[in-house]
Amino acid sequence: MKLQSEYPNLEGVTYLNTASIGLVPSTVIGKAHYFEAEIARRGTAAMDEETEVAVFESARQAAASLLNAPIANIALTSSSTEALCQVAWWLQPRRGENVVSVEREFPSVVYPWYRIAEDTRMEVRLAPAPDDGSAVDLDGVLDLLDSGTKAICISHVQYFSGERMDLGRLSDAAHAHGALLIVDASQSAGQVPIDVQRSGIDVLIAGGYKFLCGTFGAAICYLSPRVLEGLRPPFVGWRSVMEPFNFDARYKTLAQSAKRLEFSTTAYAAAIALGAACDYIRDLEPAKIMESNSSLAARLIEGLEEYEVPVVTPKEPSARAGVVTARFPGYDGAQIASEFGERGVVVSSRGDATRFSFHFYNTTDDVDEALAVTGEIARRTAGCQL
View (tube, rainbow, N blue to C red):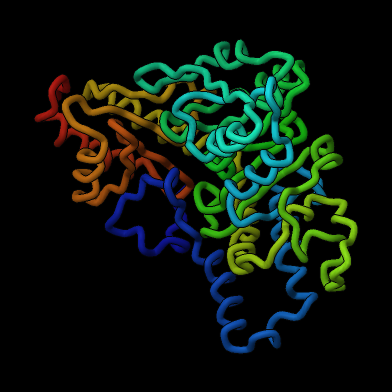
């Protein structure tokens, strides 16, 4: 699906690291740069109240369309961690209550709950992960649920292994126990089709700078009608209320929509980029992106296995997307990532493993280049053969 006109700088480099930072299309970053240049040159002459509101409404509309969500249920925050912390401190489980997640989860998905536990003595329950970091035992996650469970908080696509979780099964189990399903989609939004209404997700957060191909400084937060009705945000500011531009110091009614999470002046250019990126991804069609990413991942997995490089990522297409993690026997992940980088192939190290991640700007040539480097390394890696 490579779109060379949007990524002229990809010549000479094989970029397989979208799970860390996605590449931003030139048309997307161009809109953000234009906005910032106008503000720099003209100040408020380039941004009156109407323009300021439009920045967020355009991005909100784009995110809502991408996720099949009502516009009123979408908030734009500075990061996925900020959004999760707001939801976590509102939910604030107490002693005798718990939140369920998994070992090897990305820290920001679980750290807020541990911090709350310091104050309330709630319990954080983590389903054990296999020693090799491979597929999560979903039954093990569900076995941790009980009448005291307030939420399952989990990533849709796991950052380490690339495993894609079954949202429908998680949602059904959470709701059967009266709990919420809180999903971090930072590794899936933009490469996996997501319908928040059909999936039964209660809260979805997604940073804009990975597979959504936006920039740092903006994230999406979806709140289901059930959550939105009762959510009282722990942070409030001038933008939290129904009519923010009234600038009335007397406390006013909070916004009836998810806007109540948007409490402060934030990175407007990042919001513009996020909205433009969501539109860009939607036009490419997430289903087609997932098909392409999954196909590239399958080609890489097959090649790695030919070199007897152990693959951590599940092989079943339904259980993965465009992220593949592997271990090179006798080498740590950082050493392997460095060797790939020296040969023009950009990947990530994650602990003792190496992570490859594909997106719409990658092709089969990129896979073959990665496998060519793998072949060089395999010649001297214990346990691998040509």
